[in-house]
Length: 357
Image (cartoon, rainbow, N blue to C red; front, side):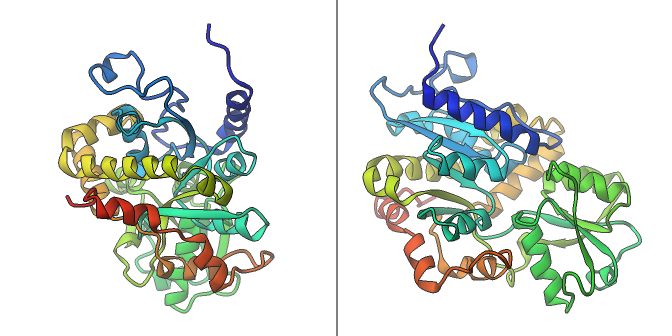
């Protein structure tokens, strides 16, 4: 039996703590095994050399938004690029806790808000890539609500006060002149703070609308339980940096070669999704338990549309996110935001042609 290193044991401890906050209709099993395992699924794929550096990557495992991270591991893309990535699925807060505690070297986080909150609380962070420039969620409502304006005086659900989709929902409501606490009530949908829990609260009529990922919303829409109000990803007036690859500043400075290998691998994984529908849908089946072919086709097309081919961290994608941070957190200045965003790794990949697909 292999011995577990103290650092791996610590990360597994964070995982156990974080699982209470994870949940979805199709959550994959978390994995700390490198992509070079001996399973039939990995047969013939490149394996990382024993001397390859290990990089612990905390990421989400409840929705397909982070599918490209798992695909890079399962298809041996990380290993091909010479880095042994141990991906672990955690809830959003647990992801950041793992990075701050040093039990993970980095995180691909669907919401940048927690990264900025971590920075504001004293941990120097870098965002080196932004996997998407939109919020990949659908705002759905009960069938008696036919427009955003009709949410006046109603209850709007959110996974948590810091959830990215909750922030985007509040920003959307403000576009219609509706303010949280004045024109509608924001309701945190349960202690688990999950997308599935948020949708369940809507179906149970505990809230009147909520934003959840398409893979979760689509079945409920087709069954007539809820209906679509707004596709948040289609709103050009709601820019948001999502699926950010964030690390401690010290790690980026000390290990730029490893960071570059991980960035290269994530870009190559997005390219695989765009170019190999079969590989992408196989990952959705295995990791996220999507079996219906129509649902698979729909989710693959969605990922092609929302994932950035050139994942540059752009200042314009984060201004509104920072403005919507909790009032008890000191907002970041423009200078602090500039210092956090590091485009050098994506730019290096661009120069080498990795983003041409």
